[in-house]
Length: 334
Image (cartoon, rainbow, N blue to C red; front, side):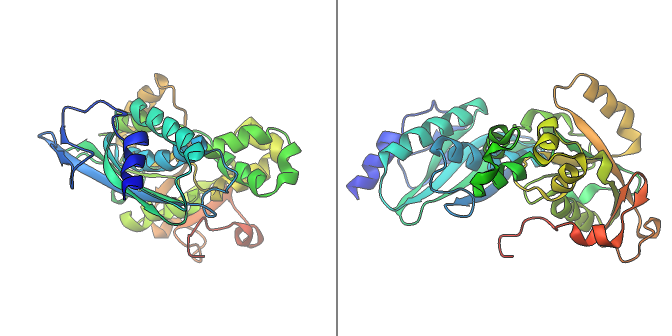
């Protein structure tokens, strides 16, 4: 067991200053923490696994960034402020050449978000990293999936599809020569944090989710939780110039944007009564957001076979053939 403790002491202990709300962290059976008065605790856990989320030749610094950002994104989706982090890591052997850049990247991103590692576990096994992240959100103010109402406008932050294209390059080396391939691989591993932007949506947005399993899958989570339906305009999906150049046309780029997972952008809804407030917010924001559709009732969808969402292109429902070609997003067990 001394090897485990030496590993913790060398790579994880004494890397950060204690937050004021941390009374006890690494080195005991439990961490002791204080939640500020007037706030709720938001908690999320995510796991990344070698062979499922990254390949053996992936830069460990990228692996750390991607793993932690997926957790940070969950807090963003609730409008929460990051606070504490626990980590469980399994490794076949303690590979210090891998751990050093992994930890450097991990703590750099954590420090950017005032996020303190407070505990965890190390064990021998297949390379797997699990994070439990905790943050604060004002009492009763959390952004949730269940608040969308008929008439709300549907928005997404940033641009979609880059992550999937980057994954294509990672899995098929022959695509490395396509335009902007290296840029898209970086986008796959290095998503932008939306923490600050999400907090600005508190009191304005009626629902929110982060895009981790693909827009189609994730927007359906909002629709199911809110018991509503949606019309989504494929031609209004925001895509980057690099993605269009990679595929050679905007149609394929936007079809990819529909089902690309691990984006860690936000999909959220804005009620009409808050539209002017939101427009004013966006005028001063560095984060871009695009309206892609609207929340509707079941009666407002012309295609009664549609499941939650009616997709349109140029204000016209897409054909059955095109609908069949659209993938349904990422599922770990499919």
